Amino acid sequence: MTRKTSNPATLAVIGGTGAEGGGLALRWAAAGHRVIIGSRDSAKAAAAAGELRALLPAGSGRLEGAASGAAAKEAAVVVLTVPFAAQMTTALALKPVLGGKILVDVTVPLVPPKVSTVQLPAGGSCVAQVQKELGPGVRVVSAFQNVSAHKLKKLEQAIACDVLVCADDKEARERVIELAADAGLRGINAGPLANSAAAEALTSLLIWINRAYKVPDAGIAITGLG
Ligand SMILES: NC(=O)c1ccc[n+]([C@@H]2O[C@H](COP(=O)([O-])OP(=O)(O)OC[C@H]3O[C@@H](n4cnc5c(N)ncnc54)[C@H](OP(=O)(O)O)[C@@H]3O)[C@@H](O)[C@H]2O)c1
Image 1 (cartoon, rainbow, N blue to C red):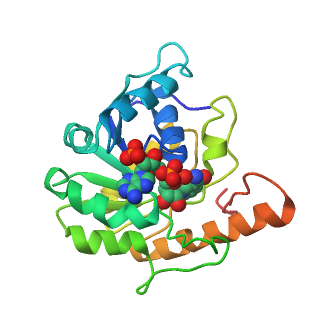
Image 2: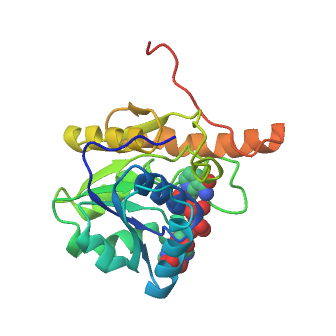
């Protein structure tokens, strides 16, 4: 249940060959954006894009694959969906093509094997750490940490999970709330990037809850917003 976007853009989803990025890429393409899946291996990106294209309804946007650097260079908004262990090196490698752009970082600092226990890095948020390393020239936004990939791939279903959106750049935060809505999700203004620590921590709680209640995709909802 995506919505037709009123503000189509070129989006690069780095790590979109994986579960979470692939689900977001699918939803944004269905909403009418042009989406480029970025991978360390351009052939793998092309194959993943081909598989996702087969799931798209008529009238969707373009969905392509490319090497990560080329994808990020082409895009107005770059989305990072790689494991925590690869987050910083991947972000730093893309820095030369990220100037002035929004980088949506979906990373959760999971440290196997105890992924259902909160293990935030020293200093709190791993996304805030990326902003620190990339510097103010890149507009880092934290979002989507609490939405399971399982939900994203079911295009026809509404997703009962809010998206906490944190950034120090207010305009970038609003743009990502809009992108969440395009994907069929309610984005919530959750404040500055430092608050991303709460969203990152919540994911381990959700993994715990999934196991405890034997469900695939527990989520979160903010109440009281009318
Ligand atoms: N899965 C979920 O339900 C979910 C929900 C919320 C948040 N997240 C977060 O979203 C991120 C992606 O999750 P995921 O489940 O999609 O991960 P994943 O499938 O394990 O990995 C995604 C992609 O990251 C790239 N990658 C893997 N290892 C790498 C490495 N060592 N160096 C560079 N790139 C590497 C791979 O792309 P290429 O080989 O094509 O380069 C891979 O396809 C994680 O931080 C996760 O915590 C996931």
